[in-house]
Length: 471
Image 1 (cartoon, one colour):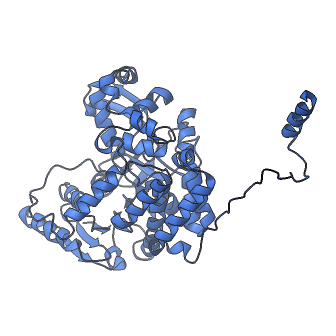
Image 2 (image 1 turned 90 degrees about the horizontal axis):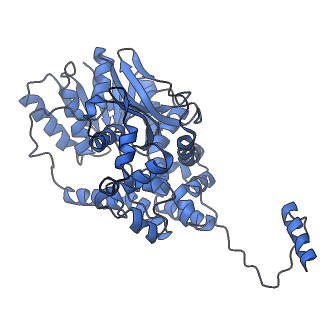
Image 3 (image 1 turned 120 degrees about the vertical axis):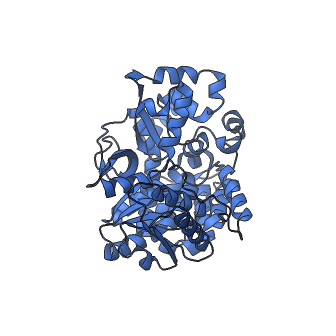
C-alpha cells in the first residue's frame, strides 16, 4: 500500500477532504498517512478524526503525526503539499499594504503583489522539501496544492528534478457553471481547457459534436446571466473564450475592473467572492478566529462520503492501479502550449496511468488568449527570479509588471509598496536576508530649470524644429 505524506496537514478541512477521498478509493484502503506540520496545534485533530474513520469503516489504513519533515517523507510514494507560510497574519499584509497604494483586490492570494509575496514565502519551504525528497524518496511525486500555484511550480521545476504536478479545482468547478449556463449535464460536455492556472481558457466545449459556445455567448448577452459573472462575462465577450476561476479572482489579474471606484461599482458589486474588497481575506480570518482553539472535526461524520472533485486521489489511483485518469495539471510547459514560453508553468490536459503522468500537446492558444496569459507570465517569471536569486530589484519588477498594480500606482509608489511588504514579512522571507529595496528620491524640477545640453531624441528634435518654424 502507498505511503502518503501530507506537508501542511494543519490545513484541517482540505487535509480531511484529501484523506477521505483516498480512503474511499478502491485499492487505496490501506494507505499509510504521515501528517506533518511545524507544530502540533491542529494535526492531532486530523489524526484523531482519521483514526475514527478507519475504525468505523474497518479499513487497513494507518495515520500518524510528526513535526519532522524528513521523518514524514522517508520512503513516501506521494507527498501532498497544502501548507501556507505565515498564515492569516501574512495574508493581512498581502491584502492591506497594497490597498494603501490603491491596489484593491478581492481574493488577494494568487494575483498581484499578494500573489508574488505569497509565492515567495512558499518557495523556500518547497525547495527545502524537494531537497529532502531527493535524498529520502527520490521516486515520489509531489502533488502540489500550494498557491501561488504557477510561481511555486515554476520555481520547483527550475530548481529540482523531483516529479511534480500542481493541482487546482478551477477547471472542474468552472465546468459545473458552464453546464448550468448551457443547460447540458456536465458529464456529457467534451472540453479542452489550457492556459495558466486561474487563467486557463476553455478552448472547446461540445455536446454530441455540437459547439456549445454560441449558446454560452448568447446567454451572456442576457442580463440575468451576465449579472452573475460580469468580469468573466466581459472577458468572454471581448476575448472570445471563457476562463477558469471566479470573477473575483480574474478581476485581480487584469487592469480593467478594479482600477477606481467607478469601475468597481460597475463590475465588482456582486456579493461574496464576486468582487468585494478583501472578500477572501475576511472569510479566512473569520474561519481562523472561529476555530482558533477548537476541534472543528469533533462532530464530523465518520462514514466515508463520495469522493470530492479534487484530482489528488484519482491521480494516486491511476498510478497505483493503472486505471487511467484524465485531468488538468500544472507543469513546466516545454511544448504543451506552443505560443507560451517553454520554461514557464502552464496548465493543460494531462493523463495518469501506472507508468506515470503525461501532458498532451495543445498547440497554440488563440493569440489574444496567449497575450493575456503573458501579462501574468511576465510577473511570474520575475517573481521566480527574485525567489531563486534573492534579488530584491526583481521583486520590485514583478510587482511593477502586475497589470492591476500598474493601472493604479506609479513606479515610485510600487517601489515603496514593495519595500513596505518586504519589511513587514521578513520573518518568512529568508532568501532576502539583509537585502533592502533602495528608495528612489523625488526629483524636484524648478520652473526656471535649464535643460542639460545633451542630444535630443530625434522625434523631439523634429517637433521642436516645427515649433520654431511655427513661431
